[in-house]
Image (cartoon, rainbow, N blue to C red; front, side, top):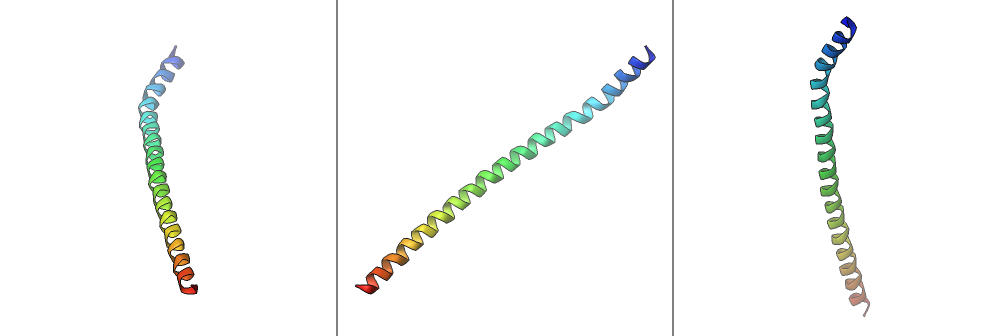
Length: 66
């Protein structure tokens, strides 16, 4: 019984320590997801703008050739 009591004490000591760790892991995951979404939006915006720019440049070249 002394061993089990010791194990219970150990469990009680470590349980509160693991909960914040898990929470911090979840928070960091959430932050990573948010950053990834923002990053993806930025990439999409850059791609959209660059495509727009390419179309404008192509149109300008076509006008110059005419």
